Image 1 (cartoon, helix red, strand yellow):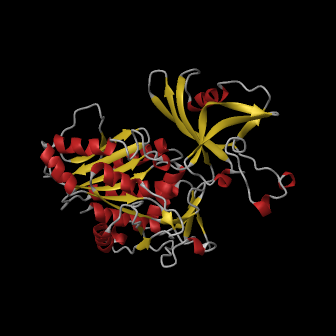
Image 2: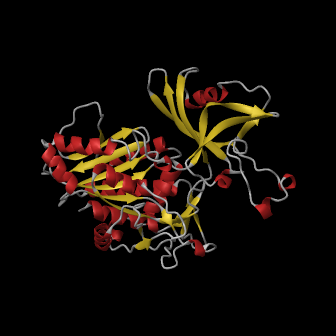
Image 3: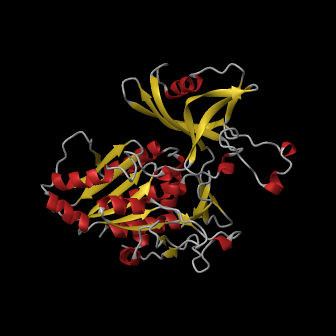
Length: 432
């Protein structure tokens, strides 16, 4: 199916709404689930028995979602086609004892999550969002989406060398945001504020997973509005595209020869080693249970996995106009040039020649151009969930993504066309 038949600029508009409404991984999977609900999917509990009937289903666990669509007539050994992504982004996260302050300022104690560009969090209006756990074990999402906190930078008068010697930030001392005034700092003030904000009775919150986020909304940028600036594109851009692609395929499933899957994991930015990360058992367990629910055996499971392909979709680096020498001289990906095929011979990306052929066929089917990314030999290469997925589950995996600038900043930049080009390539891939 060609790109114009499935997505247009409205996809990018919807991406911007998705980014704004998804300040945390927990919000992101809730919003993805809502979109899948509208496409006829239904949530299943991991503690329930699963049936093998056709249709769309999804599992939510913390900040991760795995969704799949079983077409009519699918055999137990029918292979899967998986779009993999991650829901987390580098940021500042609230510590177990959040209430702090000094010299008349009230502050929130935060810890650094992942590898953020620290300077990008300075002098921004920040909100606070996350998951609250109550005494009865239930959870509530909370989002204070207004200017609540700020990490103030030191004035140049008190750091005269900052522009010549560079900004040097101590992660412990210099990144604690302020959120008010007062010398009377009391344990429990922040959580009490969030209970009141969320309409939860006082003292009911006994656990929390909270993080700060920029409240500046995503926006079109440029003379012709050909760019998009916004938070958490790494990697909610891929989560959104994968959700849209799976919903589109499920809406028109005729001729499906595989089982399309979306797997959006948490904790990629710090190694993926968690029960909701790509290095955990979640994806493998869901795929196996799908096989067994359709009456399959271990042999069917092995056959299905042997024919399975995963596209690991994550953002990549567009060539930077001010730092072109940091890129490989023969590989200069551009924004709005179509999705990237990411290659690294040391397996920091999982792509090989046969994987390239799979992705090229999907892009050709969707009438979507694509580009190739490889790192400068002098620069260490980042990695993704791709190699982890390939090694853990023994399935062929290809690393792809969208080219952006300002990766790991509190506010990143992409081309306005690339999100729906990616979504159409993913839909063609899932279509088999």
